[in-house]
Length: 407
Image (tube, rainbow, N blue to C red; front, side, top):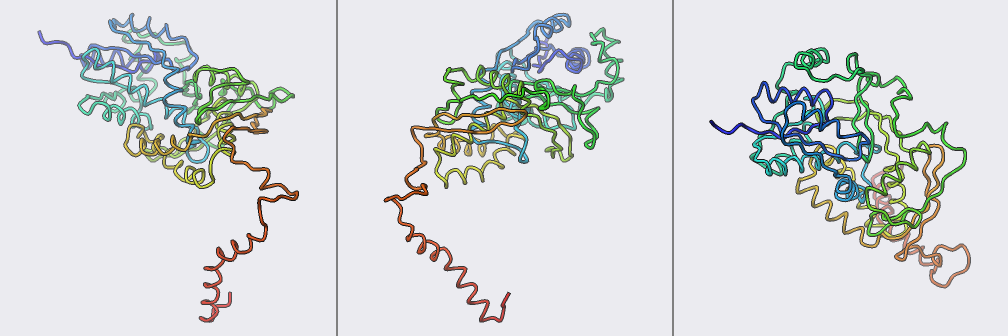
C-alpha cells in the first residue's frame, strides 16, 4: 500500500477548523497533523488537543511561541513605528508569518506534502499564509478549503458538524455575534453586529480594555526602558519581550487604552470594518516614538517615517518574507543603534502621553535651545541661512514679474 498523504493544519479547535479537519480526512483522504500556536491569545489550548485526539489525530503540535512572536516579529515591526493607514497596529497581520513558518517546519519534520489554513476566500489571511508558505517552501501544496468546498454558509457548516459528530459550542448554534482573532499584541473583532460601519460597536465586543469612561480617575505613571530600539524594562524591572508586552496590556487595558474602530482597505480590494484592542502596543508605540525623539537625528527620523507606510503595507499584504521587507528592516534596525534610554508615560482614561524621556545618547542640547543668553549659537547666522534657502524663491518671483505674472 502507498503511504497516506499528510497535511499540517493550522488548528484552533474551533468550529471551522474542526470541520476542516474532518473534511481533510473524509473528503481529501489526508492524514492530518494539527498545529496550534500559543501566541498569547489568552485561551486554554488543551481543549484543542482533546478535540484533535477525538478526531483520530496521531500527531498533535501545541507550541508556545509567545517569546518568539514578540521578539522576532512584534519588536522588529515596532522599531519602524508601524501603522497601516495611519491607525492600525497590524496585530493579526504580524502573527501570520510566524504561524506559517512553524507550519512549514512541522511539515518538514513529519514528512507532510501539504499545509492547510482556515482563512476564507474574501480576506487578507489567505494571502498572508500562502505567500509565507511559498516563500519558505516553493514546492509545498496548499489546501484552502473555503475556496474548494461547498460549505458556504453558517447553516451548512452546522449541518456538516452535526452529521459528523463534531462538537458544537452552544453559542455557535445561532448566528455568532462577531468573529474574533486574538494574540498577545491585540484582539480583532469583525462581522455580524459590526458589519454596519455607522453603528456603534457594542461594549461587549471589547475584551481587553475597560471603557475610558470606566477607567480609574487617577493617572498611572510608568517608565519604559529601551535598548537599541526595543523595550527591555518597566519601572526599572527587566523583562522578557512577551512578559513586558503582557504587563503593558494589563496597564493599558485597565486604563481604557488601545481601542480602535477602523474601516480599512483589504488587500483583496474590499473595505471591511474591524474593531481592535491593542493596549500594550499603543503604549509601546508612544514610548518608542518618545525615545526616538531624543536620540535620532532629524534626517534619519524623517526618512524612517517616509519608509514606514511602505513597510506597513508589506506586512499587511503578507510580504514579511520578501526581499524588500528585509531591505527595509535592515535600514530600520541600523537607525536604532543609539535608541537607548527611558521614557515616562502617563496613562489616563484612554490617553497615553509621553511626559519625560532621557538617554545617555541624547541629541538634545539645552545650551542651544535656551531662551537665556548662551555662547554656542550666533543668532546672526540665521539671516544667511534663511537667504540661501530663499534664493530659489526670490529667483522664481523675479522671473514671474518679468513674465507679467503678478500674483
